[in-house]
Length: 346
Ligand code: TXA
Ligand code: MG
Image (cartoon, rainbow, N blue to C red):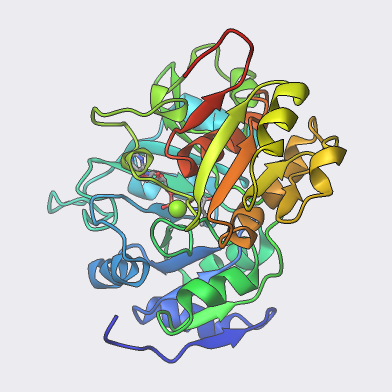
């Protein structure tokens, strides 16, 4: 990038400078409970356009608008009863809903097309993180923000990741420590009587089913999809470190035997894989059944193994929050899986 911006790093509670920066059309990296976000005034076309430049992101990939409260959705989108049921249960929190955009009296969309990648729908989220909430309140405008990573690299879950990717590209970085959840929010399209899950996150399929009996999961969550996905972001090879990631599906004996023949590679496994953990460049995501710890560590582990050349990653469970861990890993792997189960061939 030719224009190097002088970046200021600030620590809360003083958010005035950051809020002013958002109002004046600048870029602010802020913590949320999921991952760090790269924010700008969502009602200012020029400010939102700067986000795409700072991230190196294709401009057809729409941004999430972060609001101070669930009721504010009314100002920008057509809401329905199901939205309010979801909001009552999961907002503030790690849930992003997709709803049709509203127009103003002149007939133009209130949330500009630059923010929504030209789509007639907008993505709305009400973060529970206190700093994020304080910033949106103090700015007095909705804040458009994608994850604060360079396009294609894993989302940032620690200040050091933000500095690696965004220093010199944004006006302000707010230090909020490590992200609590560590994976991006659940993205769900909300219709009258149906929810379509576009990206799994900490609000799980099982959680959504407590509010609506008709929850479907977009196939792009599981597999490579060459058509037009409902969520444009799903078509990009996201969350990828420089290293090539390959997923391994199989039980302990097959996995251990396969990896014993591999030298000089990174390995992502679980606490139970004691044999593997003795090797260099081997990181545990947590215990096999502890999906919250796996989510919390995944992106930092991918960054830490960035120089490994090849990273072999054991297949996570797809239950609960495990589905989100699975989705981010399979995307990091560009859907490359080696099936080591007896009798199965790739
Ligand atoms: O946790 C999160 O969601 C973080 C924090 C900062 O809030 N944000 C985040 O934003 O992950 P981003 O831009 O990295 O991912 C947003 C996803 C993308 O896959 C995008 O395509 C999808 O949401 N999305 C946004 N607006 C959409 C829309 N109008 N229709 C369908 N999908 C949309
Ligand atoms: Mg992202």
